[in-house]
Image (tube, rainbow, N blue to C red; front, side, top):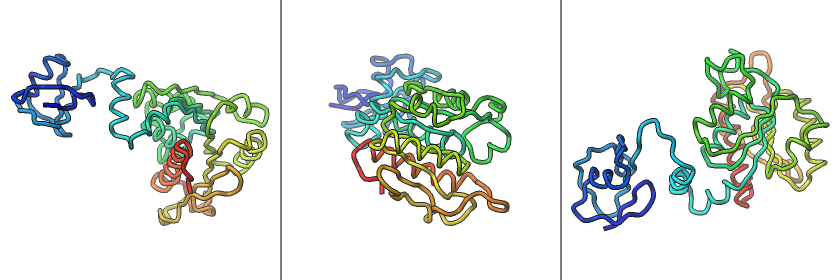
Length: 268
C-alpha cells in the first residue's frame, strides 16, 4: 500500500507500523505524527496515511522543507513564490508581520530596510522579543526569520531610505511593500518607486490605527500599480494608538496582496 512519509510517497506492506517505517526511513526520529496527530511506534498504518517523522532540534533540509510547504499550499503556489524577491521598506508593526507571513509562505528572497532599533514600545504590535531590545530591527528580524524558514534569503539593510538609495536597494524586487509610520516617508517612497519602476507593483499601508472594525480594513487599487491596504483614514494620533490586532489585519492584507500579485491575480 502507499502512504506519505514527510510528504514523499512510499510503498509499505499492509501490516507496517509507524515504528517499522521510522526505522527504515528516519531511525533517529523521536516525534511521530500520523494524519496530524502524535502517535506511538506500534500504531498500524493504513492506505493513504500521512506520516511525518521529526527529530527534535533538527532543521529540515531545503528539499524536505520545500516538500512540506508544497503539500500545505494550493498546488502550484510554492514553485512560483520561491522564485520571487520581495522588498519591505520599514520593518515595524506592518513590515515585520508582512516579512513573517511571506517567510512562512516560502518566498525565496526578502530585502528588508529600516534604520530603527527595537524599543520597548515596539513590543505592543511589532514582531520582536524582549531579548532583542536595542538591536537594529532588520538584524533582529533576520534572526527571527531564520528560525522560521532558514531557506529564505534575507538581505538586511540597516539604513535610512532616501530617494538616492531606493533604486540600488529595491531595483531587483518583484513587488515592494511600503510599511513606514510617517506620512512624509510614505509619500517619498511611493513617489520615488512609482516613477522609477512604473511597471512594478507597490503595496502600501494606509489607515490601521486604533481598535475599529477589522472589516473596514480593505485592499484597493489607488492608481497604476499602487495598492493600498487599510481603511484609508485612521492614522495614529493622541488617543488613537497603533495596536497589534488591527495593524496585523492590515499587514496580512499586504502579504496576501503580494501573494496574489506573484500568482498573477488581482489583489483587490
